[in-house]
Image (cartoon, rainbow, N blue to C red; front, side, top):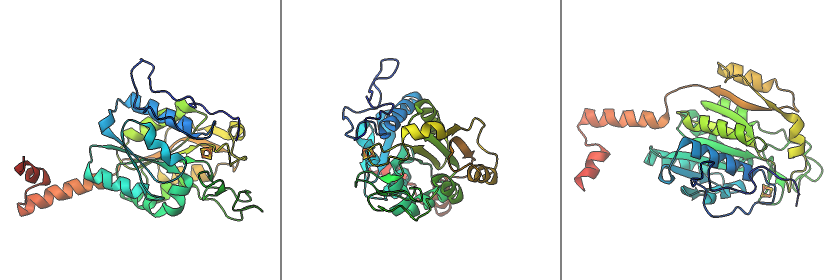
Length: 297
Ligand code: SF4
């Protein structure tokens, strides 16, 4: 186990004004120094600043170290099955559009077994925020190759080095139709908090990839290594999809750019269904769901 320390390891539960935040009393059991502590702290700060209340937020996760996160908040939470968090979150949002739905998980969960759900939720532009804690490895199962692991990476499942090319979560999100695409890092909580707030305020599918080191099984993508690789993109999101793709694909391999690379306003899936439902019920004189429910009151 590493002695590296990540910001946010101590946890909180109290905001700067002394008021309780949405953190629960449960303490994470992640390895000391895991980057996911910082992501929890970043989310806590973002939710506090947004002024959300317990009953307005739901965290949905799949399986993996990072997928334990819903337990650490006093909100609704749904710890689902491997790779299916995004699909469940779509159902939650459609059933109750008033909820702020935040899907959390790791690179293995979102970009291996869960790829199809990620792609289709993004192309439909459903109003969710997906937060990927990207550590380039399967931590919970003790260090196997993940879809974002580098070529030649030595892991428990690639003892002589990987021969696979990694997925780029950011360009995959852009290609799938996500309308907000950003990247942050566990070593920069302020940047993460601001990015998560912007993602939550975005009306549509928002994706935030957070480089969140696994200090136990990944000895390559460490906090120390990221110190020289992180580059903050100061300018605003790129004007067009082509500009955003070009920007990301032209970064040098060793650079890890942080920032919001793309944001555009487009019709949402949940909004489209609401409109369709209103039009059809009006056309056929069918009572709305709300009217039916009122009949039982
Ligand atoms: Fe974090 Fe890695 Fe430990 Fe999992 S195994 S808790 S990802 S440091």
